[in-house]
Image 1 (cartoon, rainbow, N blue to C red):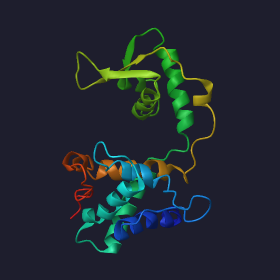
Image 2 (cartoon, rainbow, N blue to C red):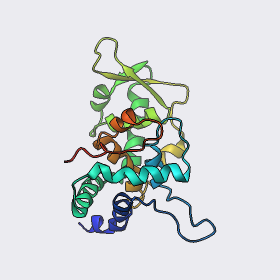
Image 3 (cartoon, rainbow, N blue to C red):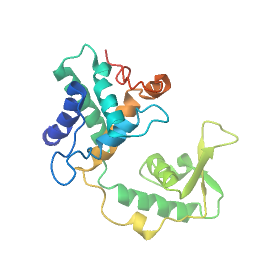
Image 4 (cartoon, rainbow, N blue to C red):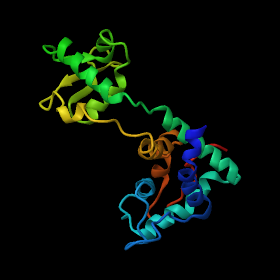
Length: 216
């Protein structure tokens, strides 16, 4: 509860943007019209293909976000945003750096001479589920992932030229909890609320976000 209270201003920023259709900007300094750095990528996601992320185009998107919450009171919208925040916080792991290192070391030790392996095989040598960390190593370009030719439902991983990860990837402090929701909250909103449907329905000049949240 205390953690959620700390992020109240963060949620209010989105709530005001949804209810009033106004984009959060710096409001002071040498560039007062500068759009908040974590809000801009969220709005860009809903731009029709081919439209540039100019201030007028992003403002048009912001003015239509309220349609996703049609019929909902302000308190209900806040509850939905809080639900997404809690979902994002559930994914926070202060020890993920150590776990990534453990996964890499186990791969080096157990699968050095094998061309490919699966998470199920790797998990036999670990006390943790390696799926999350294998996907991360794949996104960072250290492993190549594909579906197994024999078992189509199984994902297998191959070493590539960049393997193994550098020491800089495996060392250092994990991202703080203050910054983690800012990194993940946006993606949870998009994934959990079927926002892909919006992009499929948008037409040039139309920034409606009417199906952003299928909560009604």
